[in-house]
Length: 241
Image (cartoon, rainbow, N blue to C red):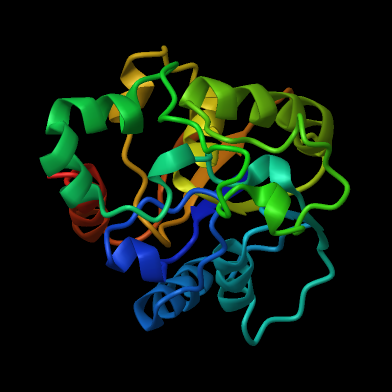
């Protein structure tokens, strides 16, 4: 069976080099094109089940991937696949933040495994509780800041309980975000806590995993032009420079 994961296409805040996290931002025109191009690469795939984050940029990417196609896939939208929460950094320019606090500090906030950015204050209007977008979540479930470790803590149980059980008999598509997908890559490829920090996931590039009947991982890799994918991954790595 096959599992394909796609990071959403370029968002407006990706383009402006802002920390995004749970902020609900739309795709740019380039992001919409990336989604359509991902759909072309997946034209011959028949997905039985699709999982997508609750954020607009992921939903719009899925819409682009499925544009012009007929699918009977069961689609689930879930906050467990949302991007990691960047706390008090959300909405700030990455380069400006690096100039203010230093590249090394921003790299720690962006890429350390278990050190989250400064949390949002309860009264900060960026705190999700004020936006009322997740009425079924308690205040303790709504993040104010997350490290990759925190993101992994919500993604891994969701993978084990909601996604993996279908993999033995169904082809699956996941559309999510840089860090929620980084958490999944860490699980699937058994990457250690330090090496996963250097994994850069380009926008709109489908990453395919092929499994044997007993769910052993047989092969994996990005679909499409590998030079272009490497270039886009490098751009992700250089965002705070």
